[in-house]
Image 1 (cartoon, helix red, strand yellow):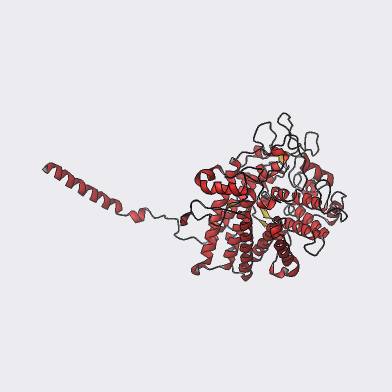
Image 2 (image 1 turned 45 degrees about the vertical axis):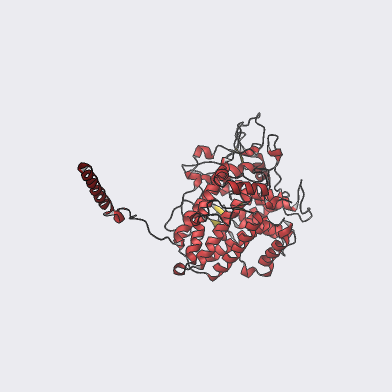
Length: 521
């Protein structure tokens, strides 16, 4: 027994001694030598914006462009987006990239609202950034976690899915608050702003332009139509001074890749980081996309406005030595040879969208003018629909002419383009039609090219309006109906099962054919 007591005593002493030794210097060893205890709103802004935009560009390339007949990934395999056939794993990527950044935007707002760091401009920017990202989420999936989202640190690990109508109404409220906050004009750190270099007035214009985009998106719903049209009229006709919007391409919300939006930071394009040159040039451009711009003599396919005899959009010619596309939606038992495609040019001898610093578009001035053209054509605002339409075309083309090309498209070239019979505004056309030409078809066909590379806005607008009218290939699935949404990520079924079942019961089956709220009659 004595031996046992002695052994236990010795062991106790050893344990106490070891714990004391471990504790000695513990705080010093476990202190991050380069980290900081607190973070500023400025430090959160750029990484979150870049991460959202990077995810947008990846899915623009391999999802939006395939659905909307910009490109076709030639193959007879299953799971090809251009046949309206895509796997649920497509959903995971965006969901898992967008939601974490919303946490950063919410933290920005919280920091900028604290007494020691109060800054109205960062509050407004955080709200605009939240709305931008949340709008992408709800327009992609429909009903989503919103009011309880990103509150895991507060103990909410299974957030409820909110109705899209309620989400939209709250996003409108956030944009109203952002507009008011930014009107105060509190200074922010220019080097931490990868979009506008600290220009608060441009952030305010972006917020109100985003407001117009979202108002138009729900304008077809009877329960919100009066509120929406009244607000658009207030912003454009009644009180435009209170709601400044994008006026020129200088106001376009974008991140310049490879570097010139900040004196201290260089941001890498996801086209360069995530896509090999051989993969970038693999998809063929579709017949729909290329035939239109060839028929119109679209200025951006003119090598004079490009580099190294390559047109500004970096389009290669097909096998017959001219611009040529491949039809989209063809059956699996057919095959095609790639024709025109988007160049990759890692050597930099010519031109490629893969290396273009201007591909990081969040929202552009062209889109704003096409929004106004539609509103004017529908009689919601005063002003000429034709004027807005032509300005949309003008700014859409000129956005791509900022560097080695001429300072802007010449008056003669632009006039030739907009007087082409298939482009020219035609006041005698019907407002809308399910088939054939109409004012809405002309607006949205030109808007389709104005939205080139802008996340999934082409898809969202086609779902809202049915325009532009796309050819229906024999190989299309989903009853040849444009997919209405992405399915929820698989992980949401296992980690949030009760709320997942609830949202399916309300919104409808978790399938690509289930329409979201703003699409439903």
